[in-house]
Amino acid sequence: MSMRKILFAIAATAVTSSAMAGAVHDAALFNGNTLTRNDDNSTPSVSIGFSANFFGSNYANLFVNNNGNITFNSALNTYTPFGLTNNSFPIIAPFFADVDTRNPASGVTQYGSGTIAGHNVFGVNWINVGYYPSQSNLLNSFQLILTDRSDIGAGDFDIEFNYDKIQWETGSASGGTGGFGGTSAAAGYTDGGANDFEFAGSRVHSAFLDSNPGGLIHGSRNSNVLGRYVFNVRNGAIAPIDVPEPATIGLMGVALAGMALARRRQQVK
Image 1 (cartoon, one colour):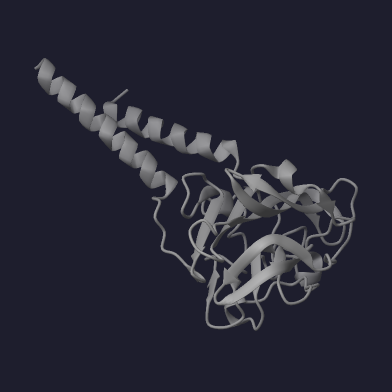
Image 2 (image 1 turned 45 degrees about the vertical axis):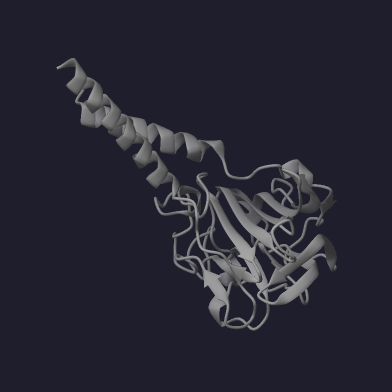
């Protein structure tokens, strides 16, 4: 086998291992509260456990909505995803679509708070959840974690989207058939005004699915874990990315290994 093929094999193995490890973590911290099996329901206002400055508005409470998102001002029972960049109220949505947990084979939406690495956190688990109407032949597993970073500045926090498995994208009431098509899921956030971000692929057929090489589990933001997307909120605004993408890190490692090998060969010669 040529050296080029060996290096590519090493890089592929590193990336595959990261993907297989899964992005969802510390799920047990967030299973203290459960939304009973439902379609389109929400929690009452619940405490985050710390103050979050989200584009100039400070929030200490939020609503967990079954359909893959949280809101701050009121609960949201909308099941067909809309464009987050044209929305009039604040929302953070790791996977805004028609989640339906009424089937006993589906998981349920759970949430809670705890501590990770010395920081207070609030998280929501949507683990192995089905889609409307009461379908469980395809299941999605994703997670939202808000992390208090008041150690950096008052109101600072991190938004973390984690994806382990995205097998469906649409409920049938949103025009989907068998979990696909129609108005597909959206992901991102907005303050309800001029500050927003929507993942590329939002409301685009098949874009978020595991079967798509560009799906959510295959990418990352501000993290070296595939399927993890981190947004650092500092002084009320999203801070720039400061960590290379995992593929970039892997290729850098391969390049360094190749350079070291070349040096050793030159020394032998």
